[in-house]
Image 1 (cartoon, one colour):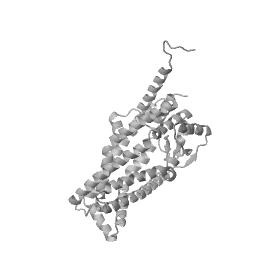
Image 2: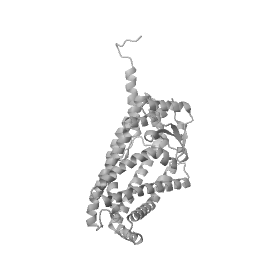
Image 3: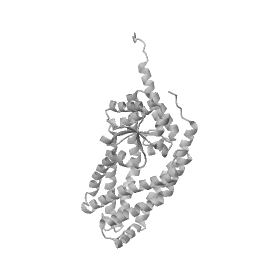
Image 4: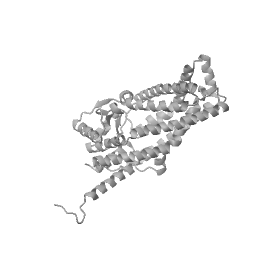
Length: 389
């Protein structure tokens, strides 16, 4: 196996790219906060609800119209930033192969999907607010848990195909190796597929998608093109580690807990807002920005803790990959290639990693594998006094 090394020029670009993306994240959060607070403090939210009531007094229709307008206006405000961060910047750094038309089509599909799912969720939430004002936040969290499990199960069948095309893996030898690896990990899969990442990006990736009878191995065609079988095996073994450790279910539980806290805070804010902003009650749709503020605020504040938890689980999945495959050099090579290809910063500032990284920095992942390799070599080195025939 040819030894891969971190490309200094690519790492320089990775640092530049990361800095710009961090600034875009701050700008995006600022736009969202200003938008929500402006609706509340200016009285626009109350005024807009009053205009809707001139059209219809049916609660479902009022909620639907408010939510759709709220979402579209925010999407339009955020579109220039999304265009720069999602289209201009990746093209500038050679990470995107997508045409503007294709990018706009994906944006439209993503917006339509998000709007549809969000509309159902908001309608259910407001029904619970009207019907069970004391416990709506608890019931909404329970429904969130149900829906996230359903979507995790159906994503490979209904959602991902809207953006990418699945094709059964043609390399029978590699497919046999990967299925055997999954069976060795005690995980059943419905097959091995490639996904046409190259139609949109130059980056490489792999995943184990779905739950239960929809679980499948998915390899980006960009990964298949430039990575050796041993390297792909270590990447997949990492994904299998998440399933063996129950990380999918743990992640769902953590997300549900954060939602529960956010909705509880939203309940407190709504009760305060009824008096402060003269809302008509908890189910007044004009108070919807308070719900967004509460849930979004909790998500931002909890981000460092959630990322720390995620990094811990990712580290365990790396260790699982190394132990299961016994191929630390292939793991090192795969991580090095991914850093070069995906413009991943190998050694970010510690505070940046703490706040924003859901995975350990690639430099740390490589050092873990080097340590595993060294310990394996020491274990296999004859010690003085050992007897061999």
